[in-house]
Length: 109
Length: 109
DNA sequence: GGCCGTCAGGAACATTTTGTTCCGCATGGA
DNA sequence: TCCATGCGGAACAAAATGTTCCTGACGGCC
Image 1 (spheres, rainbow over the protein chains, first blue to last red):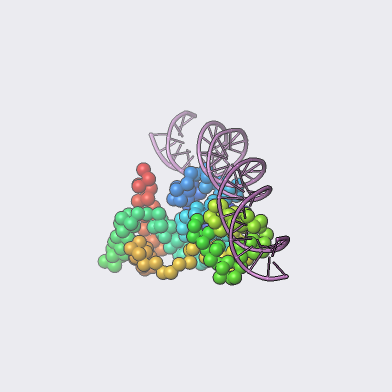
Image 2: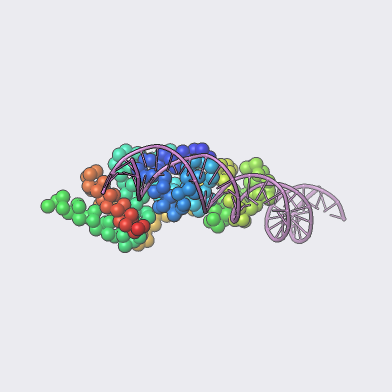
C-alpha cells in the first residue's frame, strides 16, 4: 500500500506535523510509526482508525478511496485545530475553548 | 477488531452470500477468509479494499466509522470549539492552535 | 567551536501474526 | 448412501511486525 504510506506523509505535512509528532499523538513509538510512513509495515485495523483520527481523516481517504476534501488554507487551519482537540483531555479541551472565546471577546472590545 | 469481523459476517448475509463464496470472489482460500470473519486474523490494507469491493462496501463502513451524529459530552465540546473557530480570523485561529498545542506539549513533560 | 533537542532512517534481531494444512462435523440434495 | 458444500479447531511453517541500537542532519543556544 504505497498509496497509504504516501497519504500518511502528505496528510501530516498538510497539517504541519512531523511524523514524530503524529507518532506521539497516536501513542506509538517514533520508529514504529515511521515504518508505516515508509511503507515497510502496515498498521492493524484498530491502529488505522486511531491514525485516521489524529490526522483528521478516514480510512477511506488514507487508502485513496475518497477524493481529498477541501484543502483551502482556512480548512487546513480548522483541521489542525480539530487534530489537537482530538488528542486532548476533556478538561484541557474546555480550557482551549475558554481561551479561544476570550480571544474572540477581546477583538470585540 | 470485532466490529470488522461482525460486519464481514453481516454484510455477506445481507448480500445472501456464504463466507466461502465471498472468499472465492475475493480470491482467497476459504480458510484464510474464515479467519477474518472469526476475528482471529486481520487482512492487510490491500486485501481490505478487495473485500470491501466484493461486499459492495467501503473500509469506513466495514470498520464501523459511519455512525450517526454523535452528541455525547465530548462531541458537544468539539462543536463548541468549531463554533468559536468559525468566527475567528485566520490569525486568531492560528493563535488558538498554538495555545492548544502548547497545552498538549505541557502535558507530555 | 561545542552541546542539545528534534527529526529521520538503516540494520539486525526477537516476537507476534499470519497462512496453510489436515482434520472433523453438520446439512442437503441426488 | 454418497457427494458437495459450509464451517471451524489445532498445529505448524512462513511472513510480517515491533524493538533496539546506531548513525547522521539540522537548527538554536551558550
